[in-house]
Length: 372
Ligand SMILES: [Zn+2]
Image (cartoon, rainbow, N blue to C red):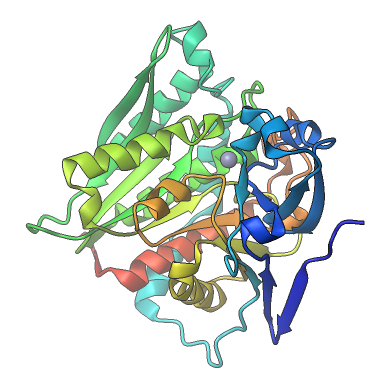
């Protein structure tokens, strides 16, 4: 029998004490890809499985586990893990200035961005080895043009030569126009695992969320620089976001980023629950974000820690308060990383609410004024 983890139930707070890695021998799974889960079946026992957090112990000595599996198993630290359902604020007092921003998020616009990205074809970065006109390239070109149409400076931030093309993030900016202005960054990956015209939830939805936020915010001036990133290569080890964090650090821009938001899989849902994922040191930021969810949307936020497996991780590792907005992982899309992840199964009103939440966060933390 696997050892049951020790659970502490405190009001709405659920904390899991995993013990030190050496004491417990427990590892956090850094991938929930169906093929990966199959690959570890004979090697591990699951000892805890709740939402985003799955812990395993090894059946064999660590040296006997292939390195391409071991890199997705991370020893857990004591007190690192939490799943918290915060209470709504005592009194909901929405700010009309914030509502003026969130009310501009539009479902049909979000869906049309999503559909256009899905229609790009096969969006895996591996396609960049095969053809100069791949689905991945079509998605990059579409997103680049969309940012330009919205009036942003757009950049192909290329970080890897592929056999037939370059692998790039698409980065859009609008400067505050004041010297030394602080910045905020919004990211969502545009690549998929590679099925033709699929990857709708993972993650055309999140990349479309980035575009929809850019569309709404194009109508405002901000006292912060706005940086939007459609990341590439997430499905091959967060290659794009790792490169983005590295390049922005080298240019000095990262030092001006106050906080960042990642959207990955925001459009499959049945119960209104969403996860806000970060690391323990930024839990108070996540509490504040959850309060915005109650104030400005119909979402039911659950804060989950620690962060793993998506583009928020490189920014957290750089010390930037960052959260991932993601669908309820306890009931996520049954088509995760499969060909059936198509646009017809998406909960668009729910995805639009996640966009509204992230707009409320930006409107609450920066000063926005109408552009005209
Ligand atoms: Zn994803």
